[in-house]
Image 1 (cartoon, rainbow, N blue to C red):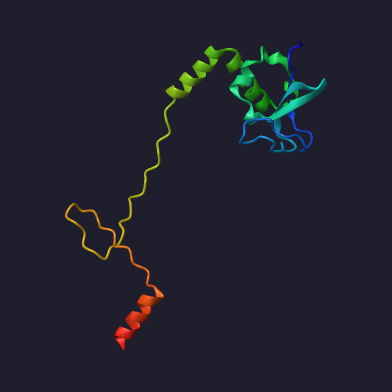
Image 2 (image 1 turned 30 degrees about the horizontal axis):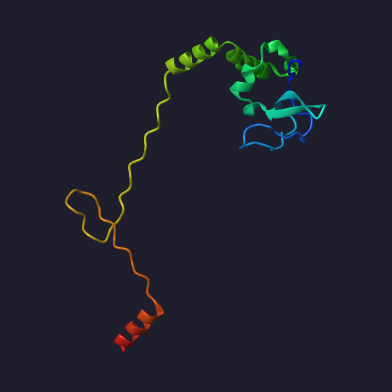
Length: 155
C-alpha cells in the first residue's frame, strides 16, 4: 500500500464538499478558499477527500511525515505557506508545539473589559431589609367568567 498523498491548494471551483467534522460535513468549499486534500480510493477508483483548512485536525496533520509530503505548498501565498508549514511542523515535532503553547501562556493576557453596573429593577412592593428588591407577584389572567362576574358586581 502506498503512502497517502496530501494536497493543499485554493479551491478552483465551489463544487467540492468538506469531509471534515459533523458541523461542517458536506458543506461546500467556496471557490478560492484554502483546502486540504487526502488521496483516497473507493472501489478501485482514486479520488480526493477535501476539507476546509480550518477543518483539518491535529490527528490528520500528525500523519504527515514531512512538510515536503504536501503537494502544492509552493503555490500558496507567503502568509498561507507560513501558516500551513508551522501547523504541520508543530504536529511532526510535538516539542515545538509545546514550546508554542508555553510561549502563548507566557504572553500577557488581554484584560477583560469592565462590566457595566447592573440596573436595579423597579418594584411596586417594598424592598426587604437585606437591600435586595422583591419581585412583584405574578398577575393572574382574567377569564371570561371572572370578567363577567366583576362586571355584574359593578352594576
